[in-house]
Image (cartoon, rainbow, N blue to C red; front, side, top):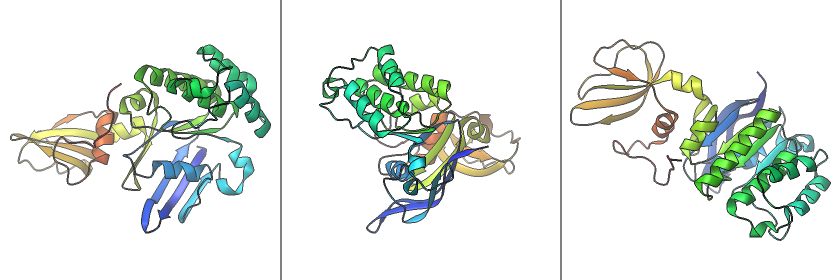
Length: 298
């Protein structure tokens, strides 16, 4: 399987603090991947190193087998939409497309114009006068018009309303289906990710905690519910990821390495939300608590 993005022990430090450390992952081609983690976990740092805007202080990052900051050919294959979708606010969409065509040899102006025409966004209006959702769509059209093989999106829909967010993601999934572009989307909105993504990268405390296909990861994890003082099953568990208690019962989220036959425990499938929150929970959080500021609804 072709690997689009690969990191090995990747790290970036600001002063004495590591923004990202010991980050190792492999993103296969053709996947729609979610990059998930709380604020300050290192998501933006990872994306900025993947597009060559930052150089690592440790480890390596490779895109299509090459370091992105050493190859203009690699950068030509990457589309990037940064946080807050920064655009020249006095430019119209058509003016931005003209600029994009001058800077990118494969820029498809017709595709960009068609994208906006399909969703009714005016191309002759300064983008600073458009809504947040419309600006996000213009930024996506610009990025897709590069005809990238890899599209990196750094929370482009975090500040827009649910309807505009859904329209953005619907447009994105349509483009991906048409072109086969690999996408890495950073987002806090877990419900959106469950609807769209088939690959998961969880980053917490500046390190990668979980990497893999969504279906495979869900299949490897189970939620077990048993008596309050029961010992975990002796067989079938590779790792207890999260434990919570009530007066009468204990709930475990576990990573399995075989079947679990202990009759004292009821076994249930996990949702993507269950999986993400379990790996993001701090060790000192109490049962039932999650990270403040995480969006878990549509």
